[in-house]
Amino acid sequence: MEERILKKTAVFIAVISAAACLSLPYFPRIRDASEEMLTAFWEYRTKTKAQRLNMTGLELIEYNNEQAKQEFGEMPSFSSQIRLKLPLGVSGKDVTGRMDYLTRTFELEMPYAGEDYLYDCPVLGDAKRLLEFTYRYQGHCGTVSFITKKVCEAKTSYDEDYYYIDFMTPKELYDHVAVVDVGCGGDVAGIEKRGVSEKNVNLDIALELKGILEKEGDSVGVYFTRTEDVSLGKESREELVELSGAELLIGIRCNSTQSGRMSSINGTQVAYGGSGKGAKRLAEICLEEVTALAQSSNKGLVAGGELTCDVPYALIKVGFMTNQEELALLCSKEYQHKAAQGIYQAIIKAFEEGL
Image (cartoon, rainbow, N blue to C red; front, side, top):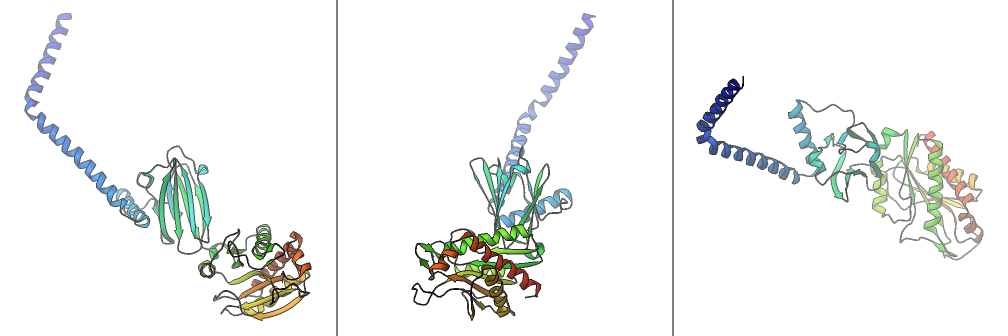
């Protein structure tokens, strides 16, 4: 038994040795071919990545779409506009997003997305609503940024492997759209009396209005030129009206005597402008509603306004900061809420009348 095993082992060793001897002349060529294949692979990988690195973000999405079509024969099926692959070990609930409609920027913070996230996890989809797409990596977190051509809101969802985004225009989300221009802000204080800055009064009323809108429902989409103490130029405010598709514009301001001196003059005044039809009627509605709710005196309508737009425009000067009693009211949360309620009701009534 042992003798047969030894004979078989000897034959096996002899065959292996013969094969090795016959192959020996080809070893260098096999080695060279392997090295050439490896070099070609890395050159292809490096070249492809270099090409993609020279692309804009939008070009990269189109490139990814074409690559996916070639690989699968067609685009992978998903119902959203944009699809991002989640990094390994990251859930969709770990991703945070923030939309700034003034800059039309939507940013996603993606934990553990590496420096090469865009190349390791290709972004696919329809980029026709995008103006720009970028990515930056810092501190074990990647930030994906989208800038839309027009004002949009980002609707997101996710599954086990992917994060999905749809950029929706205001008119796709709401029955009607308005812009509220919150006067002054930042280094533009506006009227200043007895330690009170107009920019703060305007903002306080706007924030009250924002709260009312959030409570009352979402049939009307209202976009504010500011919701904090920042300065926004005339051009940017007018651009928000145009790019949001707003149907009307309402401004919030305070008033002052021409001389700027304290006096007994008080009340609410509304200026009207814009090239859209119904501007004067919009101003009338605003004046009626604000004076009724705030119980302020009616100081009438005047033609004019600060902004140029193609929609009805009413600039509400809620009260006179040069009147001591009205200045105290303008600083009161209760009065600010009443004024905001009046503006809200004016917006609703204007749309009901078809302005």
